[in-house]
Amino acid sequence: MNLEAVREAVAHVEDPEVPVTLVDLGVVRDVGLADDGDVRVVLRPTRLACPARDEMARRVREAVRSVEPDAGVAVEWELSTWRGDEVSGRGTEVLLQIGYSDPGAAETACPYCGSTKVRREGAFGGAVCKVPFSCRACGSTYDALRGSRSLLAGAPHV
Ligand SMILES: [Zn+2]
Image (cartoon, rainbow, N blue to C red; front, side, top):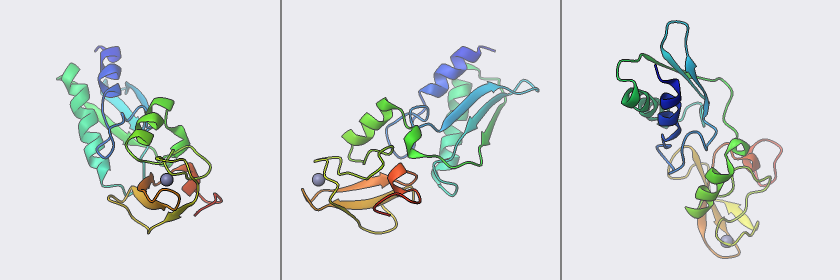
């Protein structure tokens, strides 16, 4: 078992919704070996009921088997919910480029012009993991990932 190769393969798995790796999103918490020799991957769900969960697990299994075809793979989900401030700097950069607000920012701001004069447009965006916003400064619409720091309890603009 080449665990380094397995980790490397898992590190390239992208999220089903956004072109950011699960590692950069802070979803992959651990890649290791279980007592029975299976590869054990611990993931943190971006949202507990997120329908992309099955697809994430499928992609991770596929990545492990691309380097270790005979390996058993156990995908485990943490109970704690994903937080936007765990997204890496690289992941945040990609999200901003494709029109998401910074998931780690305390206050949601327009990814196009940086204004915080924004309005939440409803509960759900194009997917249940997204919350739609519009910017009053430049007129753009954008999504915030549910779990973004600015959307958590106690944050402004909730
Ligand atoms: Zn704007």
